Image (cartoon, rainbow, N blue to C red; front, side):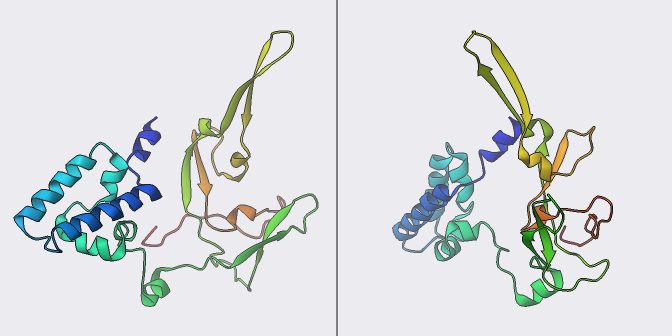
Length: 204
């Protein structure tokens, strides 16, 4: 329930579409003069009207002075000011995500696995793996089966998702890596050629 309440304020695509329409209409109404007392009062009123919808409110600029930028970029892009980085920033802070590709595993009955796309030295980062936090109980499927004799049999089964998570058996927390291809890593249990480690980079 806590997680669901947090999501109430995360805008969806339709919220940004509606907020784009709102900022355009506001911009047209004030003729681009967003720094007047009338414009500021009107924008405050607009945000008060949107307050019933947490997602819509979160998608709108909080200050009327930011509306011109939101009009130019769109409210979705405006909400993530650092989404576009310079090549210099990426060279310094970025990480490659194309060091591995999916393919049929060479291990018998192992299904598909991850294969290197270029030579990698020992200690190199094969792939970054940001982690999604999942409560263990959320990985359970709970349902009931009704039989002809009137009996009901409850079932508790773990979702396939659990197979791709990291966790301690006694922990209620699951860590799911969601960067490209990392879920295809399929080790030989006796002779692994890669390992997992915490990142020490500044932006992680």
